[in-house]
Image 1 (cartoon, rainbow, N blue to C red):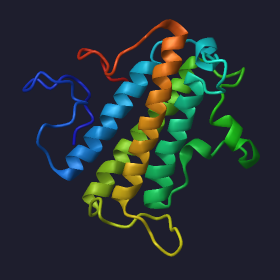
Image 2 (tube, rainbow, N blue to C red; image 1 turned 60 degrees about the vertical axis):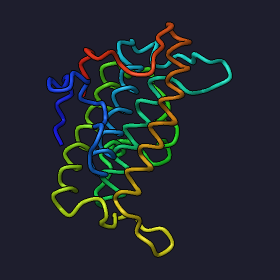
Image 3 (tube, rainbow, N blue to C red; image 1 turned 45 degrees about the vertical axis):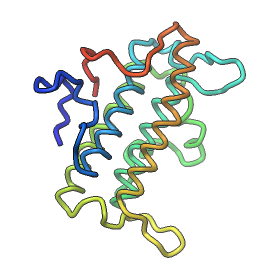
Length: 194
């Protein structure tokens, strides 16, 4: 599966659009890519102050906090849960600060740093995705164990899809409150940002 996010010339559909008829594996990864694209489009083009703005008074969630949180989720699934590798996003964060750090944009953080944190995590995930496919596919057990059972890689991917679905819904509300951006999907000609 290619990570080129341009428009598919053959169908005229954006590359993040899931296939009309594909394998289970193609649909799982295409669904994840579609959610990534929609989420990232909703977060696109904001400065640091907008990334940390509480757009909805009754919620602590921010656009930047969700970008950081989903970077953590990407690494949690593709580094730790499926592979037993240290989640890169966490390496520089003291454990006692991790819960707060992943949902906030600090005063010293720039918009570029926040966007790059997410992009780097997605890049690692896409590289690991290919390794997982080459190594046996989605039915293999992941690394993480729950009560003596190691859930399949497919299960971990579905958990990440669920996480993106939940937070893309949050992003819909946050972005509309910030500047009125609405819509279900990015425009077909929007260049998917890493």
